[in-house]
Image 1 (tube, rainbow, N blue to C red):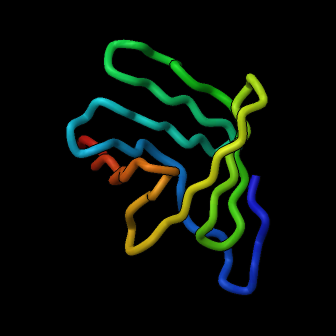
Image 2: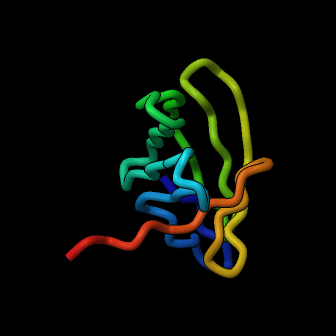
Image 3: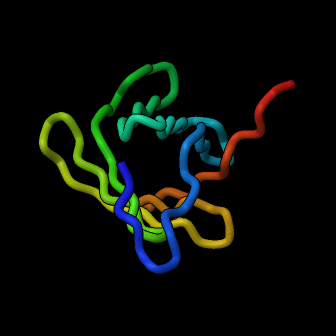
Length: 88
């Protein structure tokens, strides 16, 4: 799932959400992702790899995208997502 660099891979596993909650992207430990948009569950699914703080996505349809973790925030193409806090 991860491509280690000298810095090591970023910890990306978990749910990432836009500020308005419209887009929810789950990055799973098995290297798969599932992105919901509004009421549309699994709008996009595919696999991802991590190199340092950089993420490469390949959608199941073959579409490629990238993202970067900066200061704990996921910048995925034009989106800004924050890690969702786990409920106790």
